Image (cartoon, rainbow, N blue to C red; front, side):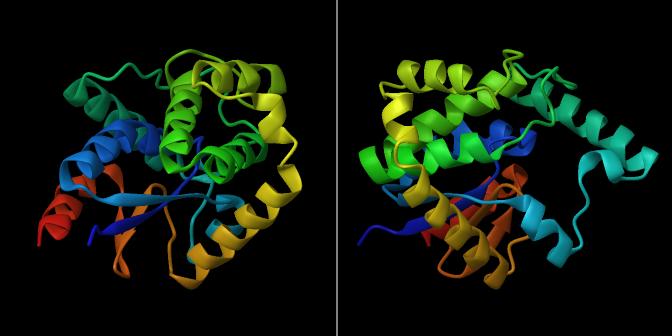
Length: 198
């Protein structure tokens, strides 16, 4: 029986972006399934000790950029360290991903999530803008307007995923949860790979 990973993330997270395609490739190699669950870290951070980037101490903000540069260069992935449209109001992007999952399945949602992450971190696009999201959806083979028509259903699922993440003690993005065990961060994908193979 195929194993299933619950994928909690923000479509605005650079760490989610750096790990997203590698995670998708890992799932394919392992023959594993994914449950795509974007969540609201604006609700998770206050109950888990997290702090938005701009509220962190200057040395933490500076070191974050060092680590992003290191990982970008190591992985050979295009990434703007300080993109023009970051942070942005992320709910619309998250809801579109949830709707894609509901309407087209997990693989379509993963493809759309990658497009949104790349748009923010590599293409200097504003992912809070409906027209931009429609363009990204179209590139992923979906109708953004049709996805947005499912907003109330998507909002209920988004809220439920967020509450579920809080109850499961998820605190950062991305978090991969396999059989109740949290693997936090794209730098834990090697550990996840070993767990999937066990």
